[in-house]
Length: 144
Image 1 (spheres, rainbow, N blue to C red):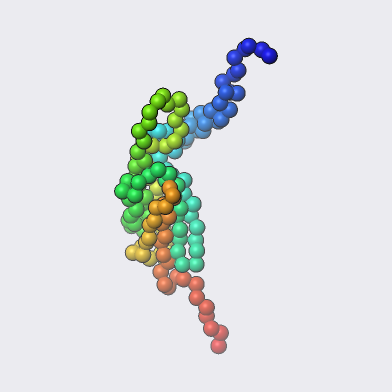
Image 2: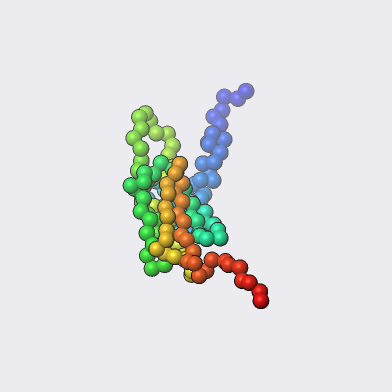
């Protein structure tokens, strides 16, 4: 077996991909990186439509309820907040988890009841339900 040092790529195989991703983000949108610690970032969000509502599931692991704000403004959903860095002991060798202020904004479709919004934070996932107005819900039409 050789005593030569292993190339850094083999020691951390995903580091090169992370570096490429970071450079691409800075190139396309220098003010809103999703991976740089300490800067403004956008959380990962799934959006689904059910029969009676639109559901937004936002990944916010480790965020406290009091550090998140959900608002409906001018027919847009705004989710903002801050993910605080937790205190640690020892030497940090690598940090890729996001910290700092985050923001997510989405236009709401026509036909929602912007006064009927529910938000729940459970196990690091914020679920926001924006209910559809009664007029836009599917209903059966009787044929005469």
